[in-house]
Structure formats: structure tokens, C-alpha cells
Image (tube, rainbow, N blue to C red):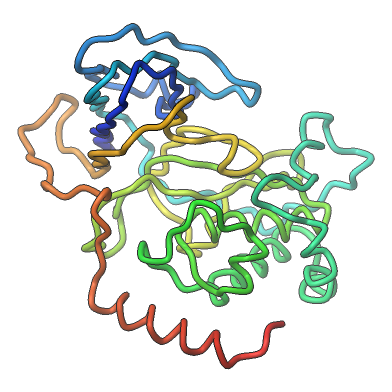
Length: 308
């Protein structure tokens, strides 16, 4: 299977501003790239690649005063299979975990294990350890939170998402990650491309997706509390303890986001087609009528329902 991925992002700065991006494909997928254009910057600036502490492929540059456009377009080969399942994968005791897993057991910026530990053990302490426990955590988070772009807030933590009962994909991932860590299961946050492949098309504009990985049975496994199903065509961009470690764009000074378009869909040729992308940017909040109704319902319910 071939998958077309890419983005077009615009920002505006009042003065030359250093910035970094976490938008490149992970190293393991570079061999699968059939063709690509970019990443490019308009106006042209020097793009310097570097690898961060978590092994992510990143860029650093100095955005000029005024408008800057970043673009990337690629066709990637994929096996076309859903996320693997291993229901027999067992938890690894902390004393036997590889050293590199320990960082994914601690609290982080958006995952407050200290605040959620008692709740996590009361909810999941009785559940069979291993794959079943992680899936039960996904089931709970999926049912606990209601998704909508209208609920997006960059500062929302896992504990706040649990109390507010709303969020976007990063909030689902943060809450599930926090619960797993509370149960001594290493969990890391993942950001990447995931299109509507093998599932009904979502009418909302495409965006990067967030999911998470847990260390069970000696290897990392993919889970997705937002969609709560095995999906086809995930392409990883970056991993970290939470979203604070994988900002798509980080500027060392003020900036304004002027354009944000993402695409990922099944391609029918190993070269670029002439498919035209929708002229919809996530810079302008987009709501379906259903999400608007859900938003009002959830807010009203949260005002009267006691917290758990």
C-alpha cells in the first residue's frame, strides 16, 4: 500500500526568530519513502537537521521577519496491515525493565501520575496485568472523554482532561499514558500521520494524530485511546514523554500561525498524483453540528455531575 503524507504550515514573526520543528518522519520509515518533495521553506532559509534526546528527526532554522511557509509532500510504502495485536504480552517488572524505559514511568508535563495514581489503582488494579490492562485503560479513556476540535486547549493535562471529560487526541493519549505509568507500565506519547484508511471518512479537516506506545513482553506496542481500534497506515513523526517533548513547531519568540494543512490518504501510484487538497486550514476552528451539540451537552453535564 502507498500512502501520501504531507503538510503546509504558515507562520508570521515580527522579527527574525529561531525555531525548531518536529515534523520529519521517524528514521525507521525513511527507507519506505518512494518519493518526496521537501521539507522546503519559503522564503528560503537554512534548514539544519538534528536528533533530539528521544531520537526524533528535527529541524532548526531562523524564521525571517514576516511570513514563512513550510511544506512537505511524500509517498510512503506501507504494509497495509492493522496495528499488531499480542494479547499474551505481559508486563515487565520495574527491576527487569531496560534502562531506557525508566523515563517513561515518571510524571511529565502533561501526565501527572502523582495526582492520578490512587484513581488508576482503584480502576485498574483488579484487571489482569499486561495487554488486557492496557486495553481496559483505553476503553475507560475512550468512554470517559468526548472528542472535538472545539475542546482543544494547549495547557490541558491528563488530570484536567479526566475531570473535564473532553479533549482532542493528545488529551486521550495523555490520560492513557498517565494511567499506564501509574500501573508501572512504561508508556510514551507518539505523534504522526494516520488517515481514514479502512474506516469511514471523517468529514473534519485532516490533522496530525496522537496515540501512545507501551512496553510489554520486551517490546513496544501501539495503542490508541482516541479511536480505540487497530488502524491501518500509522506513520510516526515523533515520540516523547508527552506533547511537551514533541512540539510540531517551537519558536523562541512570539509568532502567529497563519496556515495549517495536513494530508494523509491512500495513494494509487509511487509518484505524485495531481490530487488537489482541500482549502481548509485548522487555524480556523472547524466544528460539525454534531460536535457543537455534544459540546453544549458535555458542558452542561459537567456542571451537575459529581467528579470521580
